[in-house]
Length: 357
Image 1 (cartoon, rainbow, N blue to C red):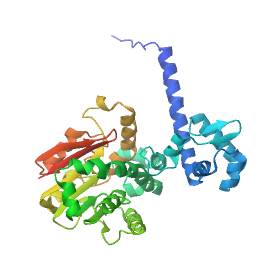
Image 2 (image 1 turned 120 degrees about the vertical axis):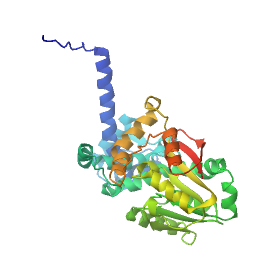
Image 3 (image 1 turned 120 degrees about the horizontal axis):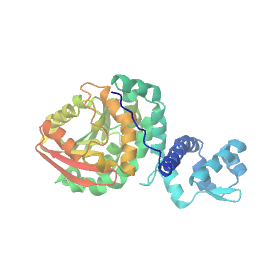
Image 4 (image 1 turned 180 degrees about the vertical axis):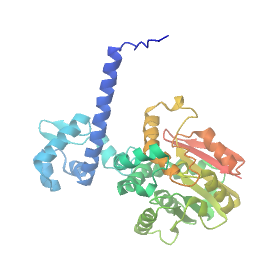
């Protein structure tokens, strides 16, 4: 006996809404590249410094070609990223915060730079999804490394010293008196340098397995005048050196590691008896349904492009993903031997957990 499958009728209203959404997403993909180009050429900064300008004036100010600048400005105006009045273009204070103020929590340029770079690994990612072999952090375009630092630094600058550390039991007092701190997976060292500037009595060691990032971190520490109290070493998370750390930090990196349990085991080994682990991870609920939000949309996409393949490229390859959630992170911490795990703070973008042996 044969059976006939009936195709459900198309809901024209729903189809139209999906087409509209897809067009919006396509525009976002194209705008991401244009935003990065505008940053590289200094177009946003020139609009802030020079005030309202015609395309010809902006091109002259930035040493670019007027015809290309005119088209770029029209695209940016259509996206709502620049203001247009007749043939003069400018940035509102809000737009300037998004695209030029690297200290503002609203600064998004690093996100555009990093995600635009990650998308360039599409062929590697296609193969990674077929094989599960992953894509190593170092296999990506260098803009991902710089963009990641630019994306996360404003949030760390706004929250780390002001609210996250005070939410930990006794840590601020330790740092003020003088302590040794490890920053694991430090990348370009933004978090390490913020700590070094805030607590002159303490010393800080940043660790990362990516050599070029450590080189950049050393340069930035030197530029900040912190080379004597903030140092950086190339080392995987399971091989960090030293002992007796009062604080071991992981900023938005544990989920990228192939063996996060092993990384936390090593943290426990190098931690002082009454020391603390500060674990900062992307904000997420414990179920997929809880993460069907604008923030979850971004983090799931980033996790698909970067975080999950990065973990799969390493030994164990646990692949926590950027939306692991508090319950799964606590499970990993307890497996590593930490008996006390609590949520110390949160932002719309971060979960901040305190781990103690």
